Image (cartoon, rainbow, N blue to C red; front, side):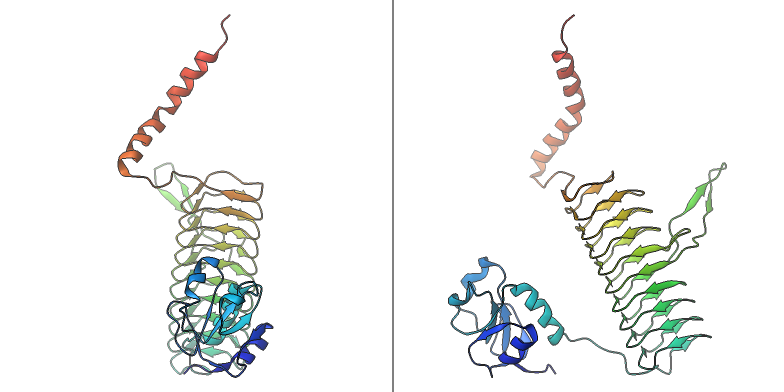
Length: 340
């Protein structure tokens, strides 16, 4: 059952001002459109002002500039969206494995577990694994030899860590993620076959990293694959061997980064983006959805590739014209060439 808070308590938690009944009870978060009595809502986009007159929320997180638009209880802050994000931590519902080590968990030789670490049912820890204080290892998690899990990390059910994966503090890894599988390394042979290059590096995550469900982060070939502090990775993302991602970057679902590429700090990579290998992407670069990055980027800014959606008939005509561009360019170049 969710805990109830008063308006005054939430204001104190947010370090925000409030207007209205300080004892108003609040027990959930909801949108302006769907909120009921007892709910807290928020408005971060002025486009949603039209719902302020009809919302049934008991309180609204709102900027001082918009406060006159809502006559009810208010939590006043210049950053409503960030305040909403902070409140989600209070109202979040998630299952937690039972305390201590479950009797069905398998703990290898030489492991070091903090006294308050939780290891859930059917989890398997290899040899010489270190689990930090307050860490939670969910049901069915597999952790290979020599892994280090920092304090207050949370590995959801079914996560797989191969050997020599190191997580900093407060990392979250969601179900189905695989960290430390072999990178895609094969040397061509004269007979047409492939010779496997065994991957000798590891995977290192900094502090406060979150890895989405079904995401894969491959181990390095020689050096480690490194994910910096504060990086957020969505579901079903592929991070190849020896990739380095700078702190506080965010990567959306189904993006793929090929081997030995370095992504700078504070970058955003939108859904479905592909980045080829051995590139360097500068800090503060933002790549829009479904773009293909084929060269290094040395300046901050927003980058896009591909053609936007259009009616199929129009798109087919434009596709034909695109194939004709080279010929048209050469004709224009010849026409502009000065006569001798």
